[in-house]
Image (cartoon, rainbow, N blue to C red):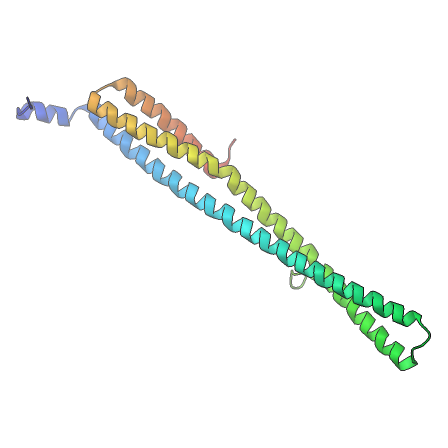
Amino acid sequence: MENTDPTEIAEQATNPFKTYCALLVSVLAMVLAISNLGGSNTGKDATMNNILASNMYSFYQAKSLKQTQYKIAADELEIQLASDKLSVQAKEQIQAKLAAYKKTQDRYESEPETGEGKKELMVKAKEFELERDMALKKDPWFDYAEGLLQLAIVLTSVAIITGRRTMAYVALMLGIVGTVCTLNGYFLFF
């Protein structure tokens, strides 16, 4: 039979235990939302930095291939210069072309003004890898936090229904651990 006495209904509504549990659910839900946001952003950061690192390595490989082609062409010109069958004018043209090829090879190796030499591309790729790795270290902490916080919310809801304080205390402990995991996901304390 349902309780219809207004005094008892008012007492149940102002029950400090239920108020505590309701506040706990609210705080846990807020931390869960923050954790979810952090986990989502961390996953995106890891993916984006992985793509950027891959792009830098692809660009590096393209520069290496072009540099090798110029090296082969320069070697062929040097072989031609070694023969005595060329006129002075032809030798001058070949030497000019050889100098241009070597200059291009050097530019492919390092181009600090544009940041697109092989040395600069490798540095950028390594930076993107470090950022990706950092995001991958953070990501599991958000997953742990989300699971713990969801369990804490469920246990708090059960504590409200059953009136069992031990479930609320267990939920509080899970919530604290979930909050620590969330903070660790952002700051990597450990």
